[in-house]
Amino acid sequence: MASPGVDQKFLGRFAKRVNDDNPYLSSMLFKILGLSVLLAEKLARARKHRKLDTTRDTKSLRLYHHIIWLAREGGLIMEQYVLPMVGNCQDDLKVLAFKLRASFYHIFVLFHNYPPVTQTTIPTLARGAQAEASRSSLTPDGAASTAGTLMNGGPVGGLPPGLASTAAPKPTSSFLLPAVNYVPIASAYFEEAARMAEQLLPGSHPIRLSVKLEQAAFTHDCLKDLEGSRRLAKHAIADVYNAQEGMDDDAFEDAAELVRVLGRIMRRGRGSTPGSTPGGGSSSTPGSRATPNPGSVPSQAVPLSGMSNFI
Image (tube, rainbow, N blue to C red; front, top):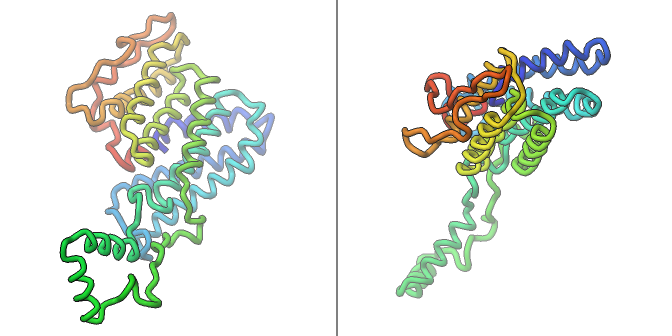
């Protein structure tokens, strides 16, 4: 979850707000809040671990298995209990619910996707044999190489009998969730949450910014689309400056922090010189605060690239 503090704050408020009218929904929101707190702690620990081969069963994988299990339980609660009941709720709660569903699938992509998002293709023995055969056929002495292989008792016509190509091993966490490609469904869920946020919430609303922030992190880390991530962050910041709604102090602080992180995402890969921010640096609407320019971002308060965008 790219902005756990903001999401958890609003989850607690919504759970308390709907307690009188819908205590069952309130209890489910409190469960999601508890899972979110646990996941934020586990994800922070996972960021400090070295990269592991998730196909091998080691003690270090217990942390990853716990993360996947918590995300699975959260996703089940959201899809089976929360989302069917938020249709008639306030817009901000509705958007947050759809955003959290996408967040849980973001975790699946990071820790349980098959194939892994960091490996687009997994070479197999059959592909290696075909590549070697094609290279030998293109060389002038390809015929001599084939004859030498036959004289030395090498395999004829590809792999020996019984040595067929095998698929790459699946993650050891397959007992928790099917090992499939979760990128398409996660992308669709983020697009749906972003579309709802744009339709129902003003541009400076912290929940809308939270949706845009995690969508930008997902686009960068999982889709490997740096320009798309920058574009999402840039548009989110522009929407903040163009917003005409007033903000209280609490909402202003949340929005300012999210704008700082979005500004860092927008400047990725462009060197140390920050670019200009659309809309200037302030909002002149009555009762509203001036949104700080994302160009001045304290480095210690901004997540680094990779998994840390998600924590």
